[in-house]
Each structure stands twice: as structure tokens, then as C-alpha cells.
Length: 275
Image 1: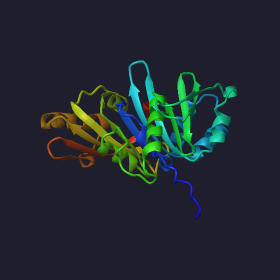
Image 2 (image 1 turned 180 degrees about the vertical axis):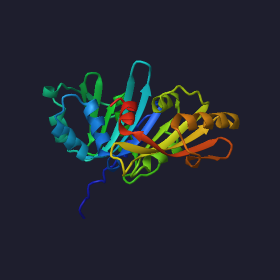
Image 3 (image 1 turned 90 degrees about the vertical axis):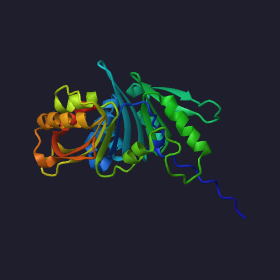
Image 4 (image 1 turned 120 degrees about the horizontal axis):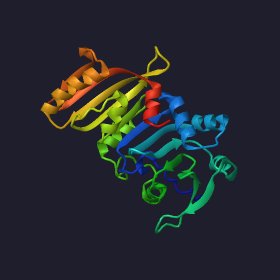
């Protein structure tokens, strides 16, 4: 009898993202390759345009969490990709301003290369997973835990620290960019240009490219208000802020407001992501 090699565990990149961000996004490449390229170029200095394009072409989907303060935005991203690890070390080299270190999670015999540049850390724990940004050691520890303990074809949300509802929402994004904000205030300020205090629990929604206008998205939003009173006031403010027609919004239950088909310039989303 021949001994077959044990099946390697394929870690789902979404499973290693932590739950410390206030704004989450899932960006499938087919929804907007340009946005993925911006994420790549903005976070990795010194990449030639052709290298940025090459990386973008090998990325299937980006999951990211953002935290904003008045002064800065921190990003944490886990990326579903197909990038040979040899290529990673070739691009993230000294010449491009990267220093390299090695991280080994506690109680693990595995080691992972970490590439750092101007305060940003990147790692490619496998040829199918890239991670970058805040708390890279946490991401690599999460990766290692799943890699060493999960069943080869595991599925589901058991390893992710995210709420299952949020997890599934991001995971199922396919031809649209999806986002979820559990501290929606700063997000709305950027989108509307005004400081609306709406008493919201969270906001989620999706962007799709507008087929008629190359430079804009169509945005669908779902607002979860703290109660009915806040919803009624909020609907009035949002209708004004977005210049909505009646047919674009509807209410569900006592605290849910849906708004569809808001036109937004792509540059505005890029600004939101500080790209």
C-alpha cells in the first residue's frame, strides 16, 4: 500500500481576520479590479505599475477591516490569492524598502516570514493567503491554529472571531463590494459630507459598478437604527443628504431602513479607504 501525503488544510483568509475593526469590507476582484489595484499600490510603496498589476491579477478577493481615528486609518487585510511564495520574496525585497523578520506563534513549531516597510507588515503564510496591516502576529497565529488543527476540508465559521452573520455576509460577496460598519458615524460623514447623528447600531451595504457610468458605483444601504423614533428622523435626514426619491427607500419592521441605487463617484469610495 502506498502512503498518500496527508491533505493540507486550506485556510480561508476570512477566518483569520480579527474582530477589532469598526468597518469591514469584502472586495471580490471581479467587482472592481481597479479598487484592488489601489489597495495594493497604496499599501506597498515602491511597487512598479507592472508589479502592482501582476499582484492584482493574482488576487481573487480582499477582506479588510479598518479603524479610523482623527489622525489616521489603520488597515488589516487578509487576501484570497494565488501567488507563488517565491514571487512574494522577490517583490518584497530590500531594494523595494522591505526588511524581513521571522515570526513563530507561541507553542508552534512553524515559522512565517514577515516583510515590513514604513510601519506596514505583510506576510504570505501560504501561496493562497496574503495578510497585511495591523497586528500581523495575531493574523499569523490565527492562520497557524487553523492550519494545524482543522480538518482538511473544514467549512463554516467556527474559527472566525467575527459574528456568524457578518462572516457570512462578507464571505458571500461575489460580484459586488460589500461592507459592514458597526461604528457607522465616520463612514456616513465621508459618504454624505455632513455630520449626521443618526443613533444607529450598524450599517451594511454593497457597491456595484454602474454599467452606464464607468466612474461611479451604485450603492445599496441597510441601516439598523436603535429604535423607531430614530428611524423616522434618520430617514428624513438621509433623504435630504443623498437627494433621494421616494422609490429609493423602504422601511422594514420598526428599525430597519433600506436605500437603493445611490449614485456615488468611485473616487469617493477610494477616499473613504484613503486610497
